[in-house]
Length: 191
Image (tube, rainbow, N blue to C red; front, side, top):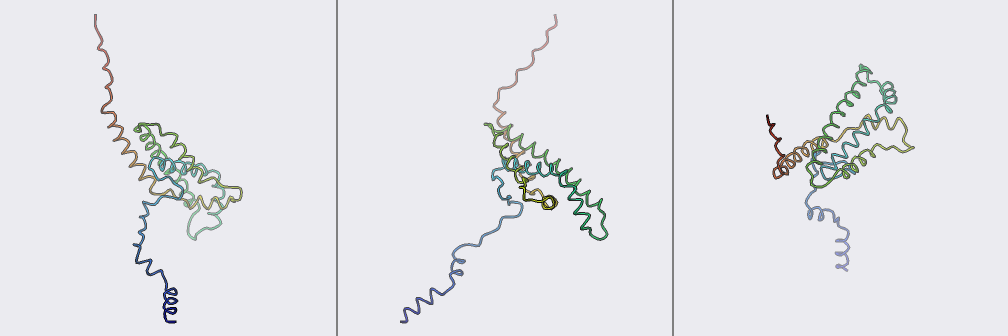
């Protein structure tokens, strides 16, 4: 009878403390190391994904701005001006265009440095990034505008793009070291 009680008391114990001691605690990755859900892991396609999602975001500007203006007008914070708040979105457009150029340069440098064609992989990553802004018919204009207003490009996008361009530029120069030199132009002959 006592053996049965001991067995039951062991079963009734909480196994969580024992399991917690057996496995080390998980360390969360720093914020700048986290990648968005669905984003590629490798740098080149990740930069392509960033380009695609940012490009789709910027292209939504004209479509969502009437609703953004309505939302900003309806929910005014006391002491603020509508023009100041709307200027933020114009500044975001300008900043976004500059970041697109950074992503383009990084992808182009990686494509030039690669020994095999990778532009199809890049095009697929761009398409996947663009698809993050594909809204279904059930998404209202107000909901799309709210998502658009609160969205921010992951910080990691720009960091990875700059690092990718630097590595690709160094790699490209390495591959060109053993290349045949361009023939020198023929010296003009005077009769």
